[in-house]
Length: 176
Image 1 (cartoon, rainbow, N blue to C red):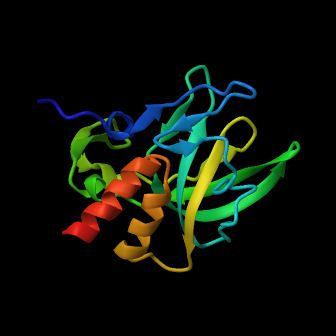
Image 2 (image 1 turned 180 degrees about the vertical axis):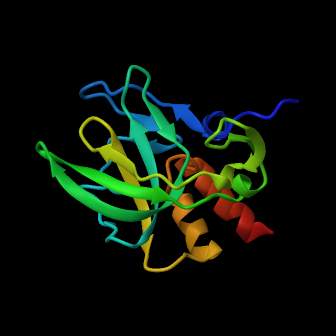
């Protein structure tokens, strides 16, 4: 199998799920979570990262087909006022798979060589919170432990559970 270039490999590995479109006055439920809730919203929620902090986030991008991105761990850089809203800047922490997946790269002369996804330069991500939104599930001054991350991941929409599923899980853990 031919190796893909770095950018194509990254795009092919990014996970996202289509979600219900926003309809005024209609409930917007996905994985047992209300997408219209402001509980974890970047602007209205209780958790707001400060520059230099690690934070766990999910993006909800409202386009022709709205979708929810897989939760990612990032390092918060800045938030800037931008036409009655704010623009968020951050960069993503490398994921384990990025150190294991080989791909193709090109040097400045156009010569092809073998590389890994982690060899690419880090990029600053930007998002204007106008139609799109970002949910923040935790903020830490240092790299969070796996236990802290697990607690934060359980709050996400991606790994959300209905009330019945949560009840069944609690009953199962008690009965074991």
